[in-house]
Image (cartoon, rainbow, N blue to C red):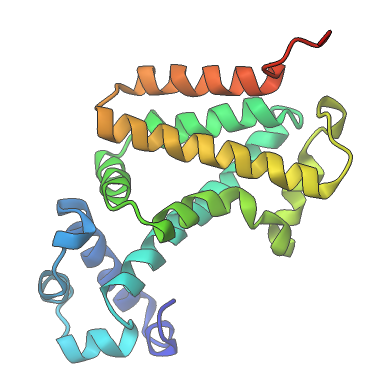
Amino acid sequence: MPKQTFFNLPEHKQKKLLESAEVEFIRVPFFEASIANIIKTAGISRGSFYQYFQDKDDLYFYLLESKIKMAKIYFSGLLEKHKGDLIEALIELQNYFLYALSDEEEKQFLKNALLYTTHRVESSFTSIWDTYLEHEEFKKIGELINRDQLNISTEKELLQIFKIVSALAFNNLIEKTVKGLSDEEAMESFKLSMRLLKQGIYKQNL
């Protein structure tokens, strides 16, 4: 998280620094990004940068997690749209990540994030699901799900479902990036995973 000094800045200065950072993180993957380029574009000194953020990681993950937070809010709307159908809402959310983002710069930022895959990057993406019970804001998500469609009886089981689908969704994004799949190929692969999850892999009479 940024230091309090960052939040004390006027909004236009906060925006300028974040936009400068995003330009750099779009230009190259994280490990190639330069603080020197960020502060030059933002028009601040290196000393000022360290008054606002601990390091490059701190700034990068603030940007990434801000984008993920927007996806969480979007997911709530998808659940309402699909009348609580968890699988259909998840498919449309994955569609959003894969190619509904019309902004090519947003796509490149996402691609660079996936190329810099670490446990923390994965945790940022999967937090869409596995931390939703920890925050009042996202408890609403659980209330929007149509439980009658699911073969579960406890919140713990629901949370486990979210962890499973988050792993599938993140792996799908990685597969697309590493293998160079088209948006359509990646989406079909994810739909297959969701269909198998929905149906179960064992025949019901076994």
